[in-house]
Image (tube, rainbow, N blue to C red):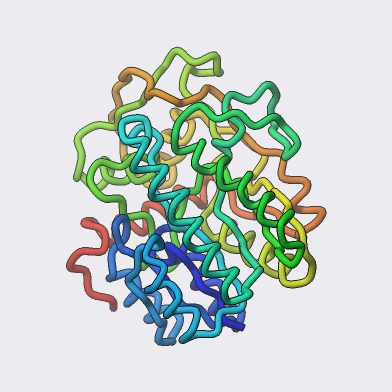
Length: 341
């Protein structure tokens, strides 16, 4: 079975691709490398012992995308590709709508043309906006607070419309919370361009000496220590969730949303303290203003995924911190100029 993975060289995409290969699937990676490094492909091939076909394509290029479907006879798609920084989306909303929504429209047109109706979509907990209650279940109201989240919500609504127009479609919408961690080998992990937008790579870059201090965005939230509380999930648990969702969409039709999280919330300062404990490194930090679009508390009710997909997160925050630190120590400059051994 051939699975096309858009954004498959990215942080979550690369871990999912490795997990798929270990389960005996064939994969083809589609990525424009705007937020990833081609070096990750070499690492994935090293870890899997397989050659991995890759096509450098922007999803909005329908002709190039069609060529992949012709060449590989794709059976299903896992769709990660998209821009993902909340703050950046506030500053560049048109770019986010064009890339995320436009790219998905182009992808779905090609899928329809080649009668590939099985899709796992990388959505986000941002579709819940400011939650009225936590933990958040899939039937909570949807109202996003930033353009990034709105692109995810627009795509989710589009998926429902696509299914209503053609009942052959089978789509899983995976609303995941905050990915942390890295492959246990330390060979693949999160390698952001420029200043990290996510917490853990910022922490690890401070720990390795690449940055002097961690900026903590806001200390006046209504939380136990004033910093934002999130549901952090190990990237390998997320990868397993995608495989479970893929198994489901191959068996039946329809559109279903699933939360992928641990069901536990940790504050920024709690994550910092845990990282310090497992790494032995002190992380200096300073409080700065809140980022636009950020919320106070967000963590998941993932019981639907456990019930319907047979999936549950297995790894804790200590393991997430440990694997993130292992990745950063082995790769102080990310994917640049580090030889495998």
